[in-house]
Image (cartoon, rainbow, N blue to C red; front, side, top):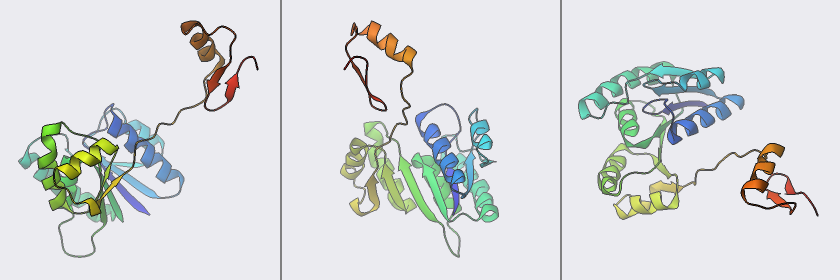
Amino acid sequence: MRLLLVVAAMRHGGAERIVVQLAADAARRGDAVTVASAGGPWVEQIRAAEVGHELVSLDRRSAPATLMAAGRLAAVVRRFRPEVVHAQNVRATMAAAVALARPGRRPALVTTLHGLAPADYPAAARLLRLAGGEVIACAPAVGRSLLAAGFPAGRLEVITNGVAVGPASEAELAAARRRFAVGSRPLADAHRGCQGAP
């Protein structure tokens, strides 16, 4: 599969972390993956995962800036020829939708909505309806808010963000014992089961 991930920038944040994880996982599976963003410190992480990066100014909050970004993104789409465009949040989705508005076979457009201020949901629902494609809400509350704002239920899926958690080290377990005054009683570690006395 050829996957284009579109995000405002690759700075430190939740949506950006998900882009890094999605890109790296898809590349490990053998997919061709490129990220389009305004850049940032996490570009090095995606390049380390053998994922391409295209510089597109998606981090400016104005309609003219979004249209300019859409023009640059359209060139990326023509060159990379993605089968799926996965945009993060509303502004990236609008730039992607404009970039994909051309004759011929159109890649599938998927949006992940990471959450908004309550007052922003009505405008987001209108824009995402216009953009087309499916929308993934990162939490049930985000999905409910989008539906309440008028977004069609048939185009919405809720996929709660997961967390990759490794097992606690012996030092972390010892620190938890001290902090919570557990003493020698067993501690539960989701990855290793009970630790300590039976």
